[in-house]
Image (cartoon, rainbow, N blue to C red):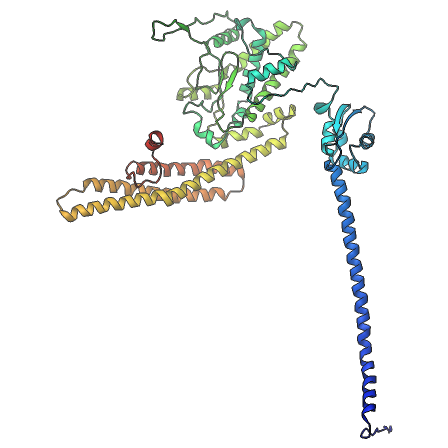
Length: 546
């Protein structure tokens, strides 16, 4: 058995107790001091890591800012340089010269940008004027023959604001850009003006072959209401040429002698004025594409239309026909005979598009169908022409638009149509629910109270007029209420469709008829409802009291 030494603590004095306590405390505090030293060491490591991260971020931000300054041409001293690019130059050598001239700061970064953007395929030999305001992209675009080649004949012309087309043409002619010659001016003898006939034939052929594409340039929800009415041409694209020019065309097509029409005298009904000759190119307001003496007018665009679409399509289509003419005539042994034969063939093949009559009549629609002319009366029916292979080929062949861009325009325009009709339908629903139906019900209550008051005075008093008004108003209110429900259901169903083409067709075929039904019921109620109750301005107020 182990022997344990027993300590007698009863005789310890206070000093012994204090020393014993201090000794014990040092032993207990030893691990704590180690922890404090370890904690200080960890804090120092973390602070050093944070300092390194901040420093690295600052360095990267500085480098990024320097590269961004060079890429975007920020904070560079103004400088203009004339740079010549030769056939033997590589993209790397061009980058070196740009750095030498001070147009780029970091050659390696410019080369990296060029590799990503395929810039080597865009730079062409030539002499170019470049400056330090140009960013990387502008420098690359600036070294392209079509944009800034000083070897090409470049003329700078400033067109003052407000200039008309004739003033612009005259200004360009004064600067040697073009001549003032109008290629569509028939002169005094159009039958003998071969230049005019060639360009006339090119326009006729272009409009006939690409009528469907031209129709897309004016396809909007608003224009759907306008075309075919209210001094607007129909949706069928035809060409009006006037009596004299039609006689020329008929003579060419039939190989018969030309006999110009007799000038008609206009009877103005006033004896003191001389007799004026009637213009043989009399303006036909029902024609979408009319020749008016020395120019063509395209009358289908509405007031809100962007004319660039129509101009782009017309110019490209006519350019395509003129290119075909040039290819054919350049190899001809007898230019004049070949040009006359070409005009005759074009007129015979495309005579169907020429129409001088009234475009508003139902007979013209039947005749146009027989001739095979397209009649796209609404936007969803017209827009698919944007993705027709022949129209895509036209735009791609002349570098105007790619297939992807044409398909994108088709999808965007279809979506735009759906959104516009959706907004109009929702607006109509809100007006009917919050304005028209409450107004009709309030007026019916007034009429009913009037009838009740008359009967309260004497049952012999007639309330036939009140009864008739109430019966008709009640029918209109019911019709509006039913039309609201049907319209809401049609809108919900159309919005649920995912395909934009199908959705646009649904908005036209399903939503618009429901909107017409609601409009018809509201129009009838407006003729009966009291003026003080109807919340919208009537036609008479808008026409005579505004």
